[in-house]
Image 1 (tube, rainbow, N blue to C red):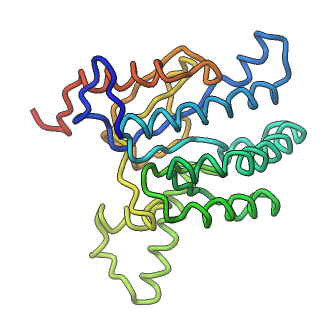
Image 2: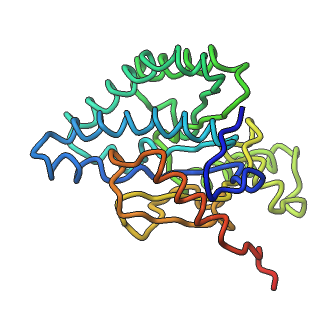
Length: 244
C-alpha cells in the first residue's frame, strides 16, 4: 500500500528517481573516521531510502554506486568497497525479497572482481520476479562509457548489415543503452547529495529532461524526510520539455 505523506501528491510522485550518493568521505572525515566507515554509513542510507521510495510509490530507483573513475582511488579503498558491496548484497537479500524489490545493475560490470560479480548476479537472479520497486545499481558506470558502448554496438550492426545508418535516430540509440534490456524509463528526478553542482558523468543521455535537485546533506545523513523534501520540490516545478 502506498504511503501518504503531507504535502506530496501521491498521483505526481516521480516514477523514476536517480541519485548521486555523494559525501561519504566528508561525513567520515568530519567524525575522524576512515573513509570506509563513511561508505558503511552510506550503505545504511541505501537501505532506508530504498524502502522509503518503494513505500511512497516510486517504481524505479537508480543509485550511482561506483563510477569508472573510482578505480583511481587507493587500492585499499577500492578493495574495501568491493567487499562492502558483497556484504551488503548478502545481508539485504532477504529484505529485497520481503519488500518485492528487484535488483539489477548497469555499467561494465564484467570488469568487477569475480566474487563481487558473482554475488551481484546471484541477487539479480533471485529477485528477478519482484515487481514493487526496480532498483538499479550503477557499478563501474560512466555516462560517456555507456554512450561509447552503445555507439560500438550500433556500428557493429551497421557493418553486419543489421542496421542502416540512415535508420539511426534517438529511439534506436536509446535501445542500445545499458538499461534498455530492462525497459527502464528515463529519470524524472535526479538527486545529488553533498551540495556539489555537477552530474559527474552520470546518465548523460537519460537525464536530458530530468529535474535536478541538489542538497547539502551528506549521503550518510540522507533519510526519508530528505527524500520527501526532494519530491515536494519536484512537484512544485513546471516541466515544459522544451515547450512553453
